[in-house]
Image 1 (tube, rainbow, N blue to C red):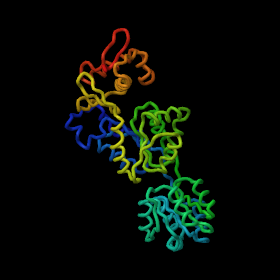
Image 2 (cartoon, helix red, strand yellow):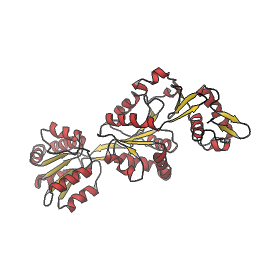
Image 3 (cartoon, rainbow, N blue to C red):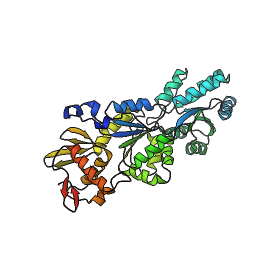
Image 4 (cartoon, rainbow, N blue to C red):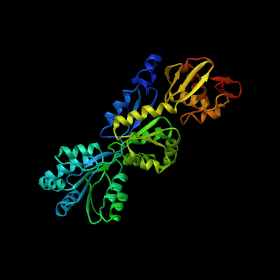
Length: 381
């Protein structure tokens, strides 16, 4: 796991600085599971003030020399498909490059030029057109369901459909087309593989479970599955965190499907773009912030910081955990034992006292955290 902004959590932002667009996500920590475009996504988030944790869930492995892809390409040349579904730009480019290496580039282009080409999104469409070909249709929402609905409504009985796989097989869509009477050729242009170093992914799973990130981004359904696998026996706790406290932000409906099946609320942009994903996070994450009016002061809780009267004051995990626990029920006294459960693992009641002291110092506002003798602590209501 790579923390892209070490030390940033200690910077205090004035109200004027916090009002700038570059600070709209200041105080929040966001996990990035992408690999190929992780730096691009991280840069977009950091440009808005977020603290970013990089933990690639998967890596793409080209299979241009794979016998399965070569056999599928030969099948397309022997029985030219009536319909070709281009799922991704990288997949289309990889397929054409592999065909060129085998001396099959021109025959394949000729077959594709005669087929009804469906591009599942702008990147797929761009790859098709860069190759000198023309797509006939694209879904508005870039989802597989839309593609299958369109093709079955158009009629596929007796036709051959070549489907470029999106890193792994999509049996439900293949079966839907076959049930409608189509013959389907699956084209495995690349595969997902585990990250070279799995430690960052396991660490991110721990951070999600511990509610130490505020949001996690996903750019593929396979990445979702990889994060769930990384949680191991703690997957139920990770799912609970995603249902309640950690926002899952997915680039599109295909990516979000595995989470929705688990009953997890997901935010997705209207279009499957990284920039749109970031705008969605900017719109949605601050809505989750809790704001309190305490002793004449306004205090808003962000991920690892509190906004006190418009000024962002970063806090370490332990004092932030105490503040969140107390803020759930203003006026209610929480004992040291109760607050202990909110702290990171391995803490004791002395650690609670230290966290409270650091919280008071970090907020720099007297009277926000009150001591109730022999009972515990509270935030006045």
